[in-house]
Image 1 (cartoon, helix red, strand yellow):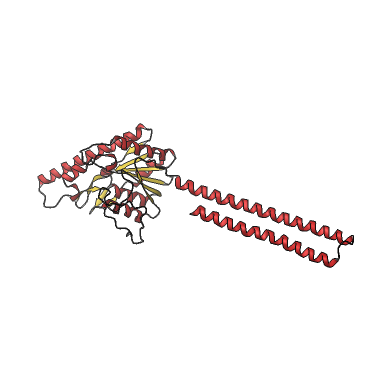
Image 2: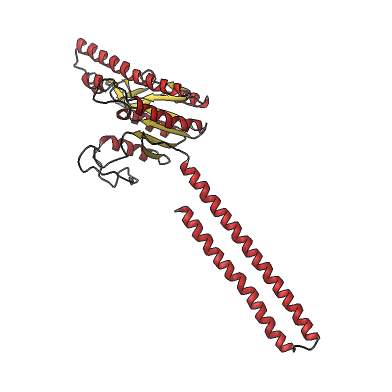
Length: 338
């Protein structure tokens, strides 16, 4: 299996969250086109989408995430389970729309609703179908998961979030990148619609999981926890209107390596050429001096002085060239790395 890329499509990015089951077709299509390019590049992709206005309204109305209290009477329990079913029906509608959008552009997507196979206890995940997802990826299929209602062994029912699914995937597979598609420019220090909200260019995560910046959004904290849990995952925040090119980093690294190698080779060739020229100069100079002595043009003492000068110059020039070459290589390597 190729290294995996997990892509999260934000529910608010592809739905009108304040309107019941209202899709943003244009935004969804942009997200699909971005992911299609990733699939066509040969990457193993798992998609996780939020519910947005599909599911949230029912889940909130029936308080699904609070579970089934022990004091709840039979009628209240039946009503809770009705809400559970309505919530599931709604999120499955969105999942089917997302999968259909993939199929329409030739991406072999498969909807994978967590309800039937993901289990929690005290709202903590205890089992999930890792092998099934692995088999789908082996067959070059694109699993499409989503936040969903799940059965909890202790509290009865629970909303399994897309962020929990992403964290689980990152901990269990060879995930190289977790990509979040949003309808804003990135992560802000507070909800982006609030006055004074600032876009964070980078987030420093300490070894204990805390972050240096003050961030006032629960969703962002969940994203940070994904980064803490999986050090190898690069979390990229992109706007759905922009194209996600997941191979840019690798391309930059390869270009830097090529530049360094070519520079080293060129420098070595130049140094070798200078050494060869210096050796030739010494040989020619020695020959000329021998002839001059034989013909009585120069005395032996004079020849010794000239020979010393020639040898010093012949050795000094390659050394100077070598020092310059080393400096050039160091500068090229530093610029390539930075």
